[in-house]
Length: 169
Image 1 (cartoon, rainbow, N blue to C red):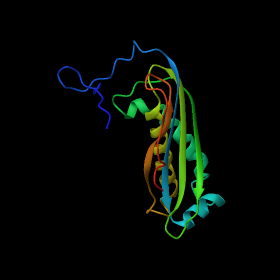
Image 2: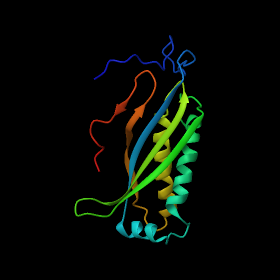
Image 3: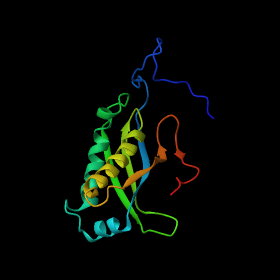
């Protein structure tokens, strides 16, 4: 466990937005991932383009980008950032004996600034997953998602971070 000073509290112990005005601008990148679990039939219909609301992954991809851009509107202490890039990717996981059918969502967010884009990457993954649920809920109300987490980040005072172990599937 790392002993870190909690920077989001003022002298009175109340929440505050951290002052980053004295920090240098650096190129920053964050990669996050998450899993969307569903029935194999739902996954097949997504792959075949047979979901009534349209192209699930295309719509979810746009929603994820929009989610990253709206992060400071959703997370109270996040700084508004000039995001220079957001990319959403998908890996399809067919059902195996011991695992559900799933779509793995990966979001990469980039900026040049005084604070990182980890929250933007994780928000992008979450909004992408919510959109997949919304687009498919008429045929599969049991869709769930989780295992959202940071895979890596670079830039800033703390430098590079890479998750030592992959998130469990």
